[in-house]
Image (tube, rainbow, N blue to C red):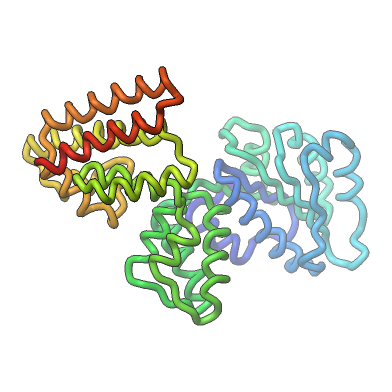
Amino acid sequence: MTALKGRQIDAFLTKPDLSAGLVLVYGPDGGLVSENAALVCRQLAEAMGGDRDAVISLHMSEVEADPQRLGIEARTPSLFGGGRVIRIRGASNKLSATLEELLSEGADVGFVVEAGDLKPADSLRKLAEKRADSRALPCYADNDQAIDALIRKSFAEANIQTEPDLVPMLRDMLGNDRQVTRREIEKLVLFAGEGGTLNRDDVVALCGDNAALAIDAVVDAIGTGHAKKFDDALTRAMAAGTDAQRLLIVSLGHFSRLRAMRAERDMGASSDQIIAKAIPRIHFSRKSVFEQQLRVWSDESLASACARLALAVGEVRKNPALANAAARQAMLAVCLAAARR
């Protein structure tokens, strides 16, 4: 079996243990698939004595449009000497038979094939896993540890200094798509410059979803009973293009979630325990705000808040022309209820 796992993948990407044959890079994380395939192409081209940038790149649609194309490319000697590397994007199981035939010929060719989330029974994956001259590299979404390591490594390579909590904050903003993560990190590195510094404000300004941050500010102001903060946050959110119905629905979801968390607190769990295991995860910058809301609101008052917001959602759907006024009135009423507690 030549299906690589864990550290075997990292070792192979650093120094491939074959110079010709098939490398199947597949998985649900398209960004990571593309990144790893590009790295393999450079490594194979160099190992085969050719120009590491002289890689023939094809898409599956091109192969299907001209079935002879791949065979011609594979059997044509390199003008620069050394072996040839052929990269095929968007591959499907239709490629399996042609690849098996070309591999059996023993040509000095490295096929780097990119595919989606293949199942064990898929012929392309079975081909890569059964042959000694092939490797299968699965690419799954990065976990928190992998994203942290990628961020720290990128900043270290550029000698960029950061605030202590900046890496986990950035990780939570980026999610786990490798391509998106790379783009955002590159943006930050370019902004800071070699040997520069980054702080939380820089990250929020460059990578934060400003609309999402504005909505968080609205619901947190409502939940803590700060009318002035609510008015300012609502104005910013609407200026960013967030419609009233979305604000009401997000607010209703927030208070429904808060009610479920409050029920856990009433059963004896601590606020720290509840917040730590909350899904979706609560960013550490909002932890104190959630703790405050769990203290302020009772189950009964949260039920009333949810009912008031649900009623407003219905009103807004019936009368879109009055959406802004109805939303503001409902959310302000809940905000003032928190202020009285």
